[in-house]
Amino acid sequence: MSVKGLLSEDLIMERLKDVFDPEIHMSIVELGLVYGVNVADDGEVEVTYTLTSPGCPLGPVIDGQIQDVLIDLPGVKRVVGKLTFSPPWDPRTMASDDVKMQLGIW
Image 1 (cartoon, rainbow, N blue to C red):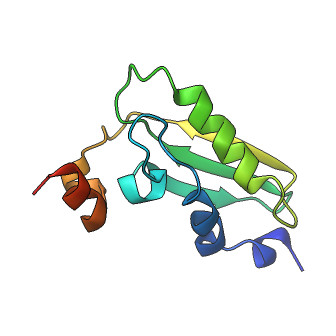
Image 2 (cartoon, helix red, strand yellow):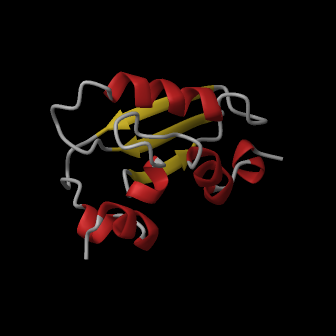
């Protein structure tokens, strides 16, 4: 069975729910900061994500958390965090309803 057969996007996203933005204390998945995941046949998992602001000094902390929650999944050989600011994060359209309620965004 290929690595892709072991690792679904749903499984990876479920694990990423345990990664929290250190300043807001909310899941990066619920915040809408994860733009996508890609699983290669060689066991590399690429996570495309953004930060709440381009000047966020805690980006390396989030990247480290992404590494930590995914590297022990069966078949994962390498985790690559791909930081992007395109499109810019907009909590009004990207965050879950629960996060919008907690942040008072409607």
